[in-house]
Image (cartoon, rainbow, N blue to C red; front, side, top):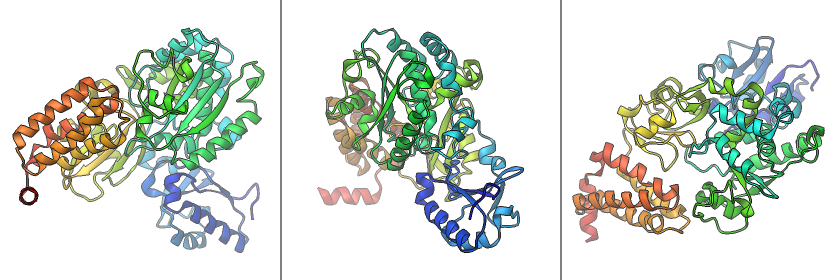
Length: 527
C-alpha cells in the first residue's frame, strides 16, 4: 500500500548492490508491505558508493535521509518488524543521517552530487537538482564560448591520458567538416574501477547532457556511447534515459526549441580491453577489428568514419554539466596546480571500506587508504598499492604521501589513470603481480605492433625464469632492456605502460624476485 504522504524507502538498484541482494531485499520489503497493509513508497535509487554497507536502505525524514545497512535478505523481516521507516535509532543496522556518515561527509562530490540521491531515469528528479541547467545555458551562448568555459575550468580527460578537454574540443570546432561526432568511451575495463558504471546506472542524464553540450560546442549532430559489453544494467538504464530525454525535448530534433539537433546511439563492445584506447575504439565502432591506429591524424581531425570526432570518457562528459551550470571558476577552485576539479577515486582490493570517493586533487594517497579505506580488511599491514588500473605502478609505502594529482604522480613515474586504487597486504607476491602484468598485456594486445605483441609474451617468460632462479641476474637485466624497448617503441599505451607495474615491482620489492626453495625445486624438476 502506498500514498503520497507515506514514508519513502530508498533501496539501491546498482550492479554492486544487486550482486549483494538488493533486488531480493526490495521484493521482500514489498511482500511484507502488501501482506501487512503498510503504507510505504519504495524508490529504487542508485548506490551512494559505500559498497561495504550495501544493500543500504535509506528513509526520508524531516531531518534528511537516514540509513540502515547492510540490510541482507535475511534481515528484512526483522527490519520491517522494528518499523525502521519511523527512524528506529536503536536498531543495530541504524547508521544515522546518510550525509553524516564519515565516508560520505568528507567527500567533495561535484560530478557525483546526484548519484545515489535521485531515481536514475526520473527526469523530474534530475531537473530538481539543476540537472539540465548547464545545457540550458549552453544553448544560449556560442560554440566558442562553450569551449572557452571548458578550457578555463581546467577539465582534463578522466580516462587516463589527462589531456585538456577544452583543447580537444577546440580542435574539433576549428576543423571544417560536413559531419562531426561525439563518442563516449564507456568501455571501462581497468581493474578496480566502477565510476563510469555508477554514473551510467545512477545518473544517466548527466552523461546525456554532457554529450549534448559537447555537440553544441563543436557542431556535432550524432553521438555514440561505446559501452562495455558486460554493463547490461547500464545499457537498460541508458536506453530508457535517452528515450525519456527525447520525449521531453532535451535530446533529438530541435532541442528545447533551439533549432539544434543531436541524437545518441549505444554500441556494445565485445570484451576487448584494447578498445579502451580511443583509436581501437573507433575501429570497433566502424565494424572492424579493434586495432590501434597510428597517429597522426588525430581523431579530433580525422576520427570516426574519417570525420572530426570528440572522444571523451564517461566522467569527463558527465562533469561538463556542472561546469556549465556553476561556471568555470567554481570548478577550477577545486584541486591544485594543473590538476583542477575533482576525481572519483575507486577503492578496491584488500581494504576494510571499499567504495567511491570523489575528492579534489591534492590530498595524499594515504588519506584514501586510511581515513576512507580504514586499512586492510585482513588487518595485516599494507604492502603495495596499484593506482591507475592494471598498467599502473605498484607503489610502496614511501610513496603513499605523494599528492593525488597528475604532475606529482608523473614525477614518481606513476599514473592516476581512471582513479582505480587496488590495495595488497603483506602476503602478496609482487613477482607474481609483475608476471600477471605481462600476461595481461599478451592476452589483451591488439597485436598490431611487435613490442607489445611479442614483448609481453617474452616478458612473462623472463619473469618466470627469474622467479625460479634461472640466471636471475642476467634475466633481470634482459627484462629491464625489454621494458625499455616496450616503453619507447609501442604504438599505444597498452604496450608502452605494461612495463610500469613490472619495473616498479622490481625496483621496490626486489626480495620477492629471489627464488624460493620451492621455486628452485620446481626449476630443477623441469630441467
